[in-house]
Length: 278
Length: 89
Picture 1 (cartoon, each protein chain N blue to C red):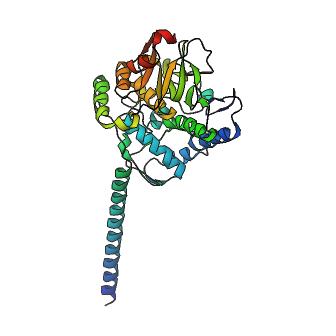
Picture 2 (cartoon, chains in turn green, cyan):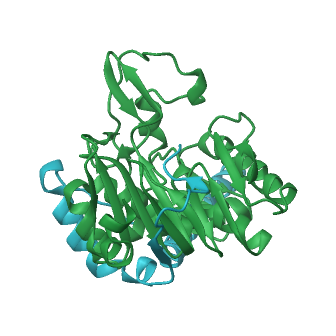
Picture 3 (cartoon, rainbow over the protein chains, first blue to last red):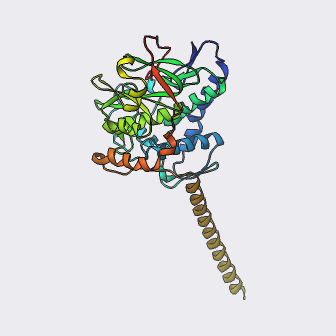
């Protein structure tokens, strides 16, 4: 296995896979979409939060994926959470956050319907600070796999595979991904304190605060890494409703609660029974 | 005569400004309508206590095509050693 570090995580490919084009892709996406690169296009777009803004084709395409995700999850996974992330204290690269950021206030997350996109024209009818973190990594993993053409690509544990890969799962067991995407959404990492209260990066748009989901990790398999990642975030935000929500969409899900109890939904159990996988 | 020409010029300027304003507003509205038609956003505005079931029932009727495929394959791993770890970041 070979790899590199990008987007704040380890990117891995099988031995022999071409690394340079994948690294270039990740670095280019990171430069364009990171909240923590002062010169990123995302920050330029966010410098004005209202009205009509001309964006690049790549930005428009990624935002379109964000809006698709918002529509598919009824607004749970939305590109409009940038302001809420800032309000929760996540205003700089995670490595630079202090142990405790002090007092924070929840922010109202604007509805995705306040964003319209036509070609490269972005219209915001109310102030919206964008954050495309919900889709950029998953889409980049999918695009990287398309670039290399075979094998698999893994970024921070989110995987797209054209060939079989055995994936370790939170809680200790594993699963074989033969094709498609697999992603885990987790509130166990990227945590910080605000006046002593734990915070994390997964904002619930219904409250404007970090989610209080009963799940610590939520792993989903889907046709692409992007869809798996979007579904994992939505299911985690839906709490106890998450497993059924996935089953209704034919998606396999595996969940670990805060006590370390592992649960799988029917779609997962039908493909990778828990007893056999454990 | 002089004052009449000035009045006329002012009136024409007012009409021009009004026309520009109306045109700009119409263009913005047309853009918004076209943008919404080509890429509508969506949102959920529900109270926290009823959020899960409400969001779920709404999603059932509108989101089938996004996730609604079975183009993935997973299976048991047996005793194989994991090549990668999910949930690592």
